[in-house]
Length: 133
Image 1 (tube, rainbow, N blue to C red):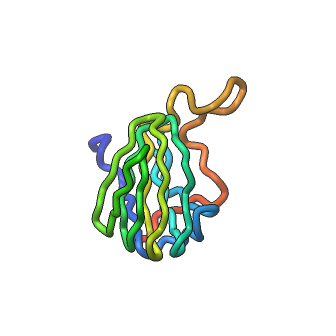
Image 2: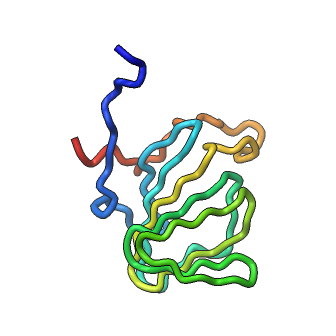
């Protein structure tokens, strides 16, 4: 049997329980990538921030305004946006929105401080198992 014959893991992104920016749902976490679903209420914002990993953000539903530097763009469902590691940006919901965030590699070499566990498979308490069989 091939080492690639593992079961397919899949999620139905519109039905994942993710309650607002303070309760994102981690779908999976490996050394290559971490996937997170974030639900934002109309007007809710992920304020100016950056991450040490490359961030790939897909708008699954709704619409958000994304700001980097002096530029702001509107992104509707189906839009994919990428951010360089360390790039400062903010995301504000223009309507109820659902986002898929991919961070790669996970964690970046400088993500944790000395003494912190850098286990890429470490999952938060609200991590999700595949929603579909």
